[in-house]
Amino acid sequence: MRVVFVHGACVRDGSWWWHRTADLLRERGVPSVAPALPSCGEAGQAAASDGPGLPEDVAAVRRALLAGDEPTVVVAHSYGGIVTAEAAAGVDSVRHLLLVSSYLPEVGQSLSDFGDGSPAPFLDVDPDGGTFGVRPELLVDTFLQDCDPEVRSQAPGHLARQSVRVTGQRVRAAAWRQVASTYLVCGEDRGTPRHLQHEFARRAGAVVELDTGHHPFLSRPAAVRDLVLSL
Image (tube, rainbow, N blue to C red; front, side):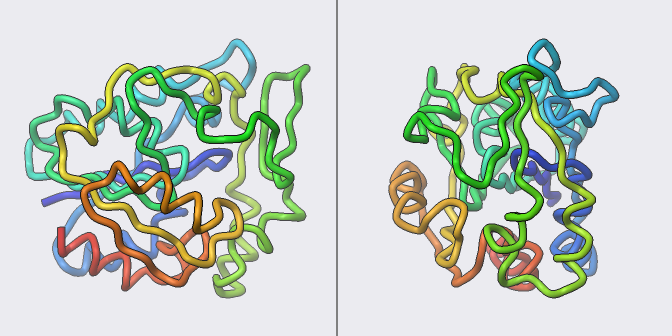
């Protein structure tokens, strides 16, 4: 078994965001990888209105999935669910999708279909540069309120600007229709409220809830490890 982690929007260095859970899985003999997402400027090309978008993110995750043939659990966080819906489609080794405070888009849907049409208050959108990002001053209170001081101090250094193109680009596949899926609702999430997560989770095969903020893999890594192993 192996795990492929797909991080959310407006961050970089996926291995850092997942490291606490990944370390615990490695102790149990389960390897993992966290592919870089080009739309977040992780492939050497800066995020911009004409830069990499969802198709490039999908390609990066799909390459990671096809790099091995052992049974794979894909753990996707937030925007990562949009990427995973297309990237994991038709990959025989993928046995389960774990969506963490995330999305299960239908074919033809985009990230913007899950919002109300206006930017969230914790986002800073640059229409001229074609990028958006998390407002650093709102990062901890919105997304990391239940994390320890070490995580809170390090997280701002792993934020990234992301191409706004990803918000409107539509997925061409819905892997959750063919692959078993579990939705992890984060009950204390201030970024994606609990009631919205339950609405998104209606497409998943199973639903589990933890009383955590937006990043349970940092605040409650043992609980996330145990959930992954159970799949």
